[in-house]
Length: 192
Image (cartoon, rainbow, N blue to C red; front, side, top):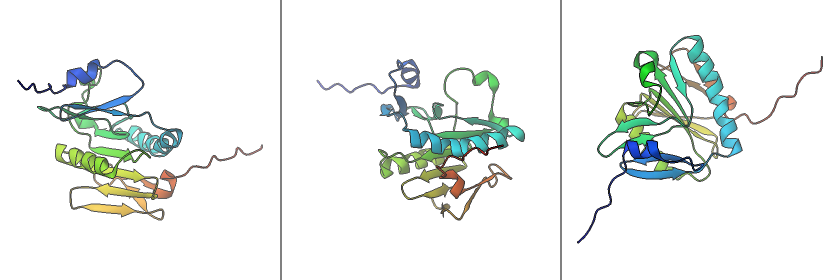
């Protein structure tokens, strides 16, 4: 007699004990993700801080940090946790924001490629977000110092250090230079 292992569910993912790792639920299979390194975390702040400031100032919605899960599909369950996510204010329901994962795809997803990420896994994430309804997926590649913007499977732009990442119709008026995304130097404090 052959037994088929049960697929993990959203409830299983929510009930996992804190073991120092992040998990995503990929079509019923739990995928463990190592904690981010210092450089990864610092680079994420280069984008999340100005993005959150702009969104808050213009009351456009909410910017979510890396530990936030988004339910992209059910049966089998698909929960992704992007490095940075934005959801428009008309889609945010504060009573649903208390516990659990966001029920749906973010409007904007920003993912940084970690040293241990496989490009095939990154491609899989991009397709998952786009198929779930994300309007813009931004992939930041520190190794190559490029930013790739996906609006669909065929509407793809590759930005280099001389370019500006623009929010377009997802975040009208917001932009950030690619150079600022990859900035790693600390600025020295000025003497009075």
